[in-house]
Image 1 (cartoon, chains in turn purple, green):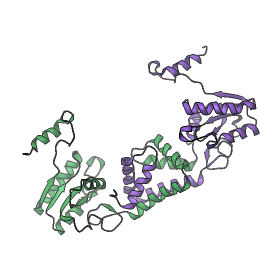
Image 2: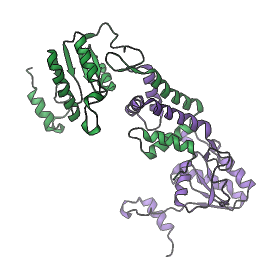
Image 3: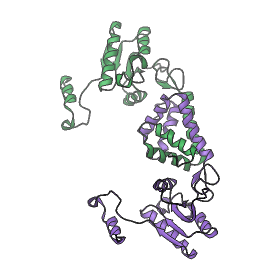
Image 4: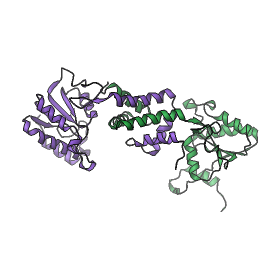
Length: 199
Length: 199
C-alpha cells in the first residue's frame, strides 16, 4: 500500500536497502532528509556520487583509495617485505590505529563463504599471490577475523602460500586486554592457555 | 585522525549526520554504498535529489506531496468539515491505515517545544487558523502525541480555536487494544477509568 508521494516512497525504499536499516528507520531517515535544507541534501547526494566516482582500489594492496597507489603503499618508510592480509578496508584502519605495524596491507574485500556464494575467486586472493610472486615478501600475516569464515580463508591462503617458502603467520588468539576471565568463552581461554608465554 | 581517502570520509560524515546513525554505522553504510554497483549508488543519490526537488507541502493540509494539492485534500469524497491535526506526515499514514477517518488532515510539522527552541510560529499553526477561519469546519480533532509537548501543543491550539465556536476534540486516552493490564502504567489506567463507557 502506497501512502506517501512516489518520490518519498522511492527515498524510503533506497534507505531501506541499506544494511541494518528497517522500514521504520528508513522512514525516519527519509523524513530527516526531506526536512533538511536543500543544500544539505545536495551535499549528501554529491558525497555518494563522488565517493563512487573517485574511489578505486589501490593497484597494489586493493585498499580503497582516491589515487592509483594508496598512501600506505606509496609511503617509502613502510616495509614492503611484510604484508598483513585483512578482509575489509576498516580492518586496515584498526591496525593503523595501533601505530605499531610498519609493513603493507592486502585487502581481500571479503572472506570465503560458501553459504553466501563467495568463493576464492570472488575475493582478492589472486592479487595477493601475484604480489608475493613478484615482489620480495618475507612474511604474510593473515589477519582475517577469528570466526569460521575468517579461519577457513586463512587456512586456504596459507596453503596457497606454502610453495613460496615464506613465513606465513596468523594473529595470536588470547584474552583481550581489559577483559574479565569470568566472561571469556572457553575456546578463547583454551587458546590463551595454548599460546601462553614466559614472563 | 583521517584514515580513509577524503571522498570516503565525506560520505561517512554525511551518513553520521543522519539521526540515530553513529560513527560505526555510518562507516558500515558508506562501505556498503562503495561496494554497490555504480547504478545502485546513482539511484540512491538521485532519490535524495528528486525527493528534495519534487516534494512540497500541500497548500491546504501542509502534508508532504508531489502535487500542489495532496491526494487526500483533492479527494471529493472526503469530508472537509472535520480536520485531524497531527504533528508529523507519518501520523497521517497511521490514521489512513485505520481506513476509518473520512475527514481531512492538518500537519503541524512539529510540536511546541521550548527546550528545542520550537515556538508556535515554527510549526504550521497559523495555517490551521486560516483554514478554520476561511472554510466551513465543524470539528478539529487534535491528534498530537500523548506526551508533554504534544499535550502542550494541543492545549495551545484548542485555546486559539475557542473563539471560532467549533467543536475541538482530543483523541481518547485508554488501554491499548491487546495490552495487558498488569503492564499498563497508572496514568493510562487512570485515564481509561475516567473515560469509561457503558456497554
